[in-house]
Image 1 (cartoon, rainbow, N blue to C red):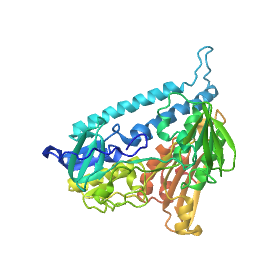
Image 2: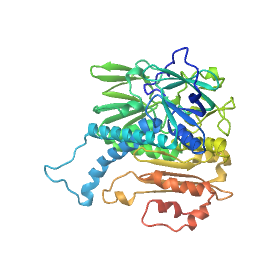
Image 3: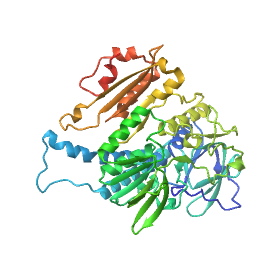
Image 4: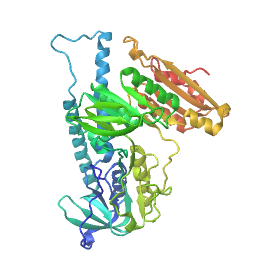
Length: 474
């Protein structure tokens, strides 16, 4: 995909006829998580593979998503750790204090991304996958034209083709939307303004709001709906929202953006109700969609539905030899899912090891501050499926030991949603430090069909936060 959100460039026409060396068992369009996983796994099974990418190798996750975001989350967390340090006897030495230097952090994050990009190049070479630099565009159902940065065209032919071009941020349809940043831009900033307005209530908006606040930026987050993190367990999402507000983030729900205007070196956000918010920058985190513009899917006969590519359980499109994985299918848009889809496709097609990805139980996390992690059904979804009398909810709220001396919030929330008839744990949710690390392991138990009695029989590891999952009263 194009990092600036523009359609894929159109290769010049006519393009040369593919040479014999340009015929491959598999062409992969997009070197993100899913594409890389599929290409390397297919090559390990003996397939001749080429992967096409017009940007850096690594995709959204490595270049402008999970990895740089999590590094910034770590950097932002030091604000609270340093504030708590005196509670544990650590006193600043006069003249040797610490201050936040966001430009240094941002530069260090970009350097780490560059290192990972170089590693992925080496992994492809080691796997025997040919990297073709440029943007791909279908000529027919077996042929893809590629245009590189020098304007040179190349025609590649594949027995099978895998579409793994990922997604891109979507700007809201309001006047001046082009003046705002999208999440990609956050990682390219050289410095941070004093005040930022974050538009959106999803996980990207909440994560970015926490990062900016932790780095010393005054943050106002405007959310069209009545709460943040729609789609997550309501109680857990409310717990995150309360903690964000208590930390100093100005979260305004029921507030839609109306327009963005320049104001000297800053900006003005006018809400739909006429409220005026001045700031040094506007971050638009209002969703993502598959990036399919410019691929010329019509030439290959690949059908789209609601701006996505539907696939069957083996990742095949309506064209039997063209497949798709990851965010272009717009099912569960998470890196581990794309990776597993890519590997399952390659194992099934080239490794004589047919398998399908189970999308029914996928753990997820929001690296907000505090962190939220979840696996299985929310309380609301469980009630919809089993009825209010068919669900039991067990929860624990408490101040973790890490905050005992500092005597601060927020409290940790741990929650189990249980099927009343079978005692099986339907959902596991946590808000608090290390929630993702803890729920990752709980996901194994939930996936194996563990019951509340199984959790209760498990001996607690004391003193920990996670022990509360196995000591909750019936």
